[in-house]
Amino acid sequence: MNYKETLEYIHAVSWTGSRPGLERISELLHKMGDPQDRLKFVHVGGTNGKGSFCAMLSSVLTASGYKTGLYTSPYVKYFNERMSIDGEMISNDELSDIVGYVKTYADAMEDKPTEFELICAVAFEYFYRNKCDIVVLEVGLGGRLDATNIIKTAELSVITGISLDHTALLGDTVEKIAEEKAGICKAERPLLYGGRDTAAGAVIKQHAEKCKCKFTETDYGALADVKYGPDGTEFSFGDEKNLKIKLLGSYQPYNAATVITAVHLLRREGYNIPDSALRRGLLDTVWHARFELLSSEPVIIFDGGHNPEGVSAAVNSVKEYFGDKRVRIITGVMKDKDYSFISRQIAQVACEVFTVTPDNPRALSAEEYAEIFCSMSVNSHACQSVGEAVSAALEKSLKDGTPIVALGSLYMYEEFTRELEDRI
Picture 1 (cartoon, helix red, strand yellow):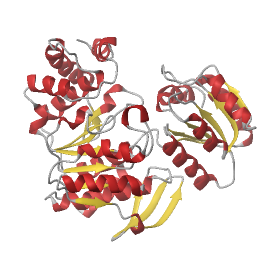
Picture 2 (picture 1 turned 180 degrees about the vertical axis):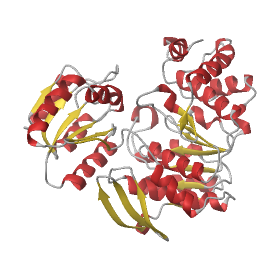
Picture 3 (picture 1 turned 60 degrees about the horizontal axis):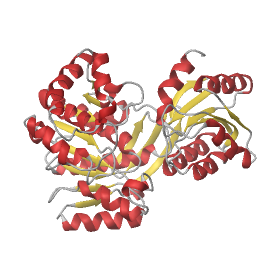
Picture 4 (picture 1 turned 45 degrees about the vertical axis):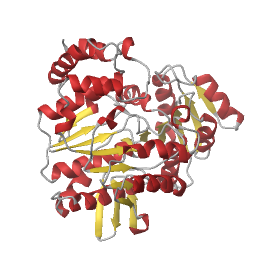
């Protein structure tokens, strides 16, 4: 298969749908010789913060000299982003080769794997063929029944935080969601909780005790001297002084604190991670679509926060960086999210809103979304495309200097950046 045929096969209709359970991925991987059993993992779940945590930790491990695999979802621009080694995403040729190999086994299964399960199998084979020392493995959805949870053990399991999201599948309280996500605990292996919800934390700690896991929580009281700037964030965490990350967003120092705590735990497990590698790895981390500065004149920022907690964090970042100054917002949202809450959060910082319909079947229409903002007396415009929204907002901000912030859906990122490049 060529690259185009490879992607068509992966995204074929026959693979779609979310069907929790480990039976299919187990069967597929067993037919392949169980490549996952020959790898070591840091397994990462949580509602928000997973991607940033994984990016930072993998960068630190790479800086320490470990051949480090990284598996994340979803991608924001190129499908190949979902699996990378030492910061380099899988090549088109290698992806096609491995998908062709996995296809032989997947096609022979009576109960076909889902798209996510198929991609997981491809990633495990990729990391195995390249002899990775360790893989930072991000959970797709939930934890207990997620396809990534087919791994038998982990060097460290991490739950970055818990909030209400995907309630139809995971439960309608943080406690129920925490129980599902705690399912990635591995017996007698360390577990780190980086969240700030105490009720969720209590559930996870109880689950850890049942599994005889070594339970640790991130001590955010040790986070100090945080300084936000347009070129990054400086902070200290416990004995680690004067650290810097290029990632913007008021939430990123908290993610970094959890990464540093994870490094301390991995050191106890025998991993050689020098302080110099920790600093360099954090500083070198690049993670797109998370309060990412795309332009300085005018200031244009994209944040992929797409659930209530994520959007609240982005709004808090707007307040941190711009104070009382209101910004122009370009936003789209999925109709299965709590868009009433999300719109109220956005209204706190918006002088004007341009709504769009993200390229996804689950998207709320731009017209419906704009009406919600109108009901809150926020000047809003329903746009027929992301390009229209970019043009309209940019025309005004080039004149008055008002910052533009796009948020509410990772599905907008590829189109948003493409339309922006055509105009500035």
